[in-house]
Length: 183
Image 1 (cartoon, helix red, strand yellow):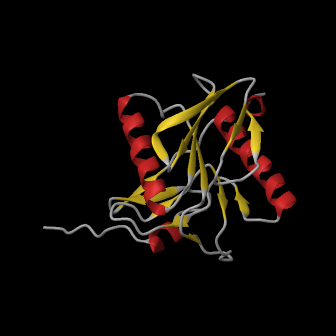
Image 2 (spheres, one colour):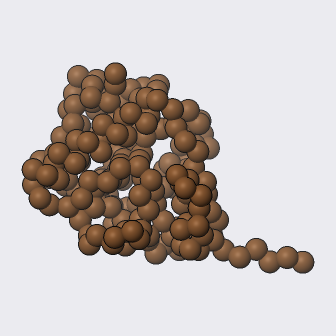
């Protein structure tokens, strides 16, 4: 009989260069690369957050593939597509704790009943870890940003093309036109 050990933070550090994963339910969950539109959207969110960071000198804008270590019963880490963090920098190590804001940009495989349940579970985990706002960004099908808040996690505010999305109270005074997510 073989006993499978639970994945550790050290396992995350040992991933091959440019790999992305999270630890969920003791398992290392690899995340596949994304396509043009979702990748560009996460980049646009990061650039907008970086401009906000520079303007306010409050917190840190972070791009895709940054690890956040959390201590939840079923999850040890997050790796959002873009994030805003107000904790202490950690040099080359993963960040300690959850971001105040996380953007999850849907890829081709992020549709259907199973994907919806997985994303809802991940949002609940974000909120349990201390994240205040999570964006569910859909640039492939509905072309919307659903803004979920810890204060009302089941009722997102939906922003469409032509509208300006925000992330209150996580990133005060920051906003982004939905149209900026598209070519």
